[in-house]
Image (tube, rainbow, N blue to C red):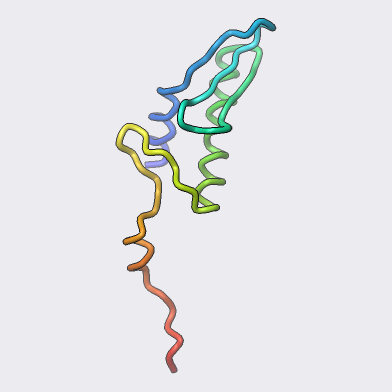
Amino acid sequence: MLTKYIQAAMKHATYELLDDKTFYGSIPGFEGVWANEPTLEACRQELQEALEDWILLGVSLNHDLPVVDGIELNYSEVASSTATKPSCSP
């Protein structure tokens, strides 16, 4: 599911050639995920790495992640409330 999520998000990436002849890429809806590299391919690779790091950080901090093309990585309240909890009774 993670691979599909990343692939779906990368399909929404936008790129532009800057005045300094480098490429800038970002993904709408993923605040702070961007890359700037000398070639388009290097920009794509760096953008995907930035996205992967952003996802890992977001999951570890329990942030809500955007739903991409119907793919959701967020934990639902139902799932977390029905998880087995340790018992404190003797």
